[in-house]
Image 1 (cartoon, one colour):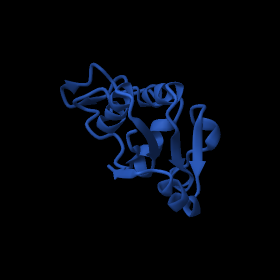
Image 2 (tube, rainbow, N blue to C red):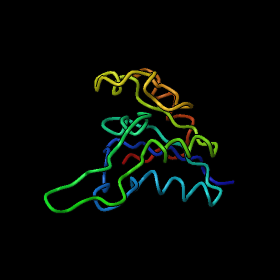
Image 3 (cartoon, one colour):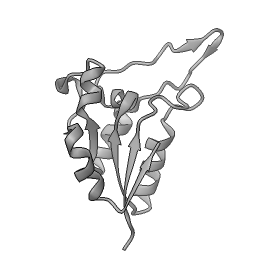
Amino acid sequence: MGKCILNVVTSGYRATLEEQDDTVVWMTHFMRSADATVDVLLSGNAVGYGVRYQDASGLAFGERRQTQPPRLADDVAALVDGGAAVYYAAADALERGIEPAELIEGLSAVEPGGLSELFARYDLVLYW
């Protein structure tokens, strides 16, 4: 039996200018499709991935337009729908003004005092 892995995504919106997906969220989908047990904790700026209504269409840097804008909340919702446990750091969300009602269904809040207990459930904790 394989190891249980927790991907801690803290560096939000990485590579979303050149790609339409966050690298770690995409990798988690890929690993789960290969029957790996991989869950996610959204922390730092990545807690924004769980915000239900995001629209990055129209994103441009000078003349460079992002023609495939990220749909990160949809990517996270697909993880939840596929059976992954997706957690978010409640203190990080609060610090960024994100209310629980703004988040997609199925995310589980983790308070700062609960992080060590969460990490202890996994064989590997990968911090991105």
